[in-house]
Length: 167
Image 1 (cartoon, rainbow, N blue to C red):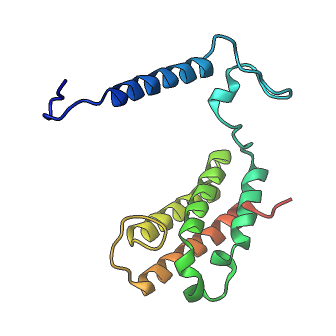
Image 2: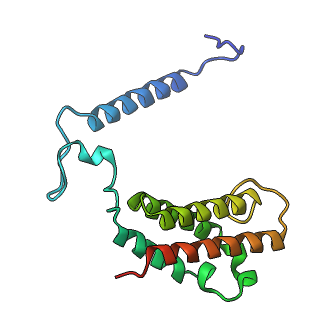
Image 3: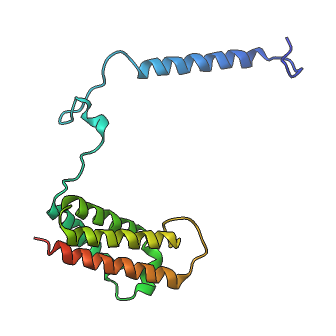
């Protein structure tokens, strides 16, 4: 017997491939058996698990709590923006998320929606400049990123004033 590449076929290789195929088929059949999987007690048995985790409660209090966490971060709280800016890409993303949460729970509050829009614009500016952890890779201008972070921080301060203190 010769294979298409002109070499001799080895009977052991064909048998080995067949054994592997059968083994995979048996394993797949065992995993996809006809009986439903057991659900541990305390977990839902309906289709809710397929819908993903529960969405956080969206209330003004939850927006304030999220904002409190963002304002405690060194990217906001540090007096030395120059020292922290290279590590603040993720914080800028969280700031934008926090502002969207606030605007979604208080859509009729002009101060909140205006401040949220300012945070969004500052976020877009930070990302557009290619500052760390976000956006496309472009040659960085540290002073440009520091300025963009300062703008995000100011917009978050405006959002904090619009939302008022946490209870």
